[in-house]
Image 1 (cartoon, one colour):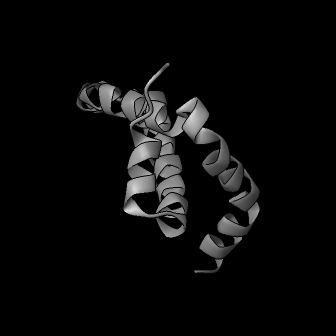
Image 2 (cartoon, rainbow, N blue to C red; image 1 turned 180 degrees about the horizontal axis):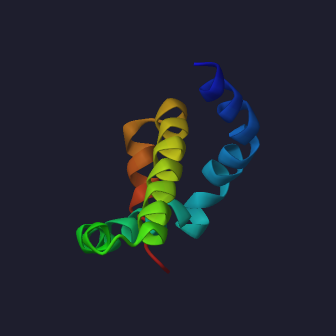
Image 3 (cartoon, rainbow, N blue to C red; image 1 turned 90 degrees about the vertical axis):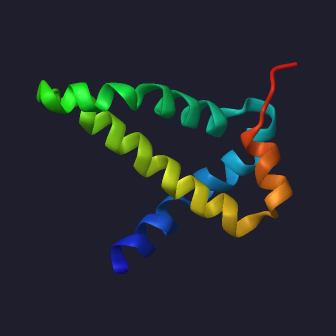
Length: 89
């Protein structure tokens, strides 16, 4: 859609920078780990109508999806695995 195209154009420089720096920082993997660790709280938040937490989880998932789309389109499976398995040195 047109909106998706505009989003991709607006964020391409940020995504390229992340692709370049992520092997050193591990930011994408950290974002995914935080999101996954907080998913258990989503059901409770929905029951308590904690809209702020649900909104934050939705935004985090949206960012992860957008970044993974860029990563998948620009690198091999092996490169992607290296980006997602960052280990502190």
